[in-house]
Length: 155
Image (cartoon, rainbow, N blue to C red):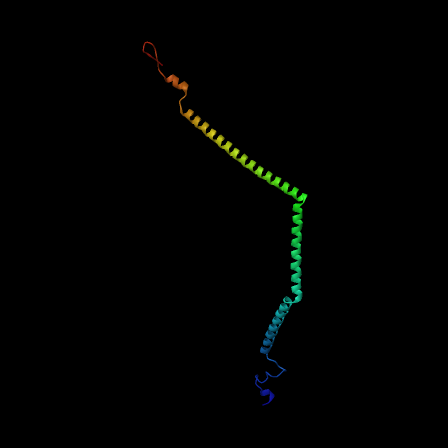
């Protein structure tokens, strides 16, 4: 068989003309190898002594910071300034509470006065309606017959 008669399968081993399908497999394989290498690098970095040391240092530093802040707050709380601040805060709270009670009392008195005013207005309107429905006394006096001593009616 000469070279021109070779089938496509026999040329697969030939380095001079690789098949397109082989390129797809090579790219996929390389991407898989790259992903595995990246994963191994991340695992190695995560498990490294430097990362563990950094984590330990950060934990120690944060713990120290919290301890220092608590100590400063405790000292301030026990100091004269801290006590004065507590007293002033208590006074402010009392003023707020007192002003709230005053506001509620004012609101209650205002509503009570409004209710009394409304009741008086309704009472006045009822009296005026009754007065308007009754005949006038001047007219009623003219309609009452008056008898004379002799028994005759005088109109």
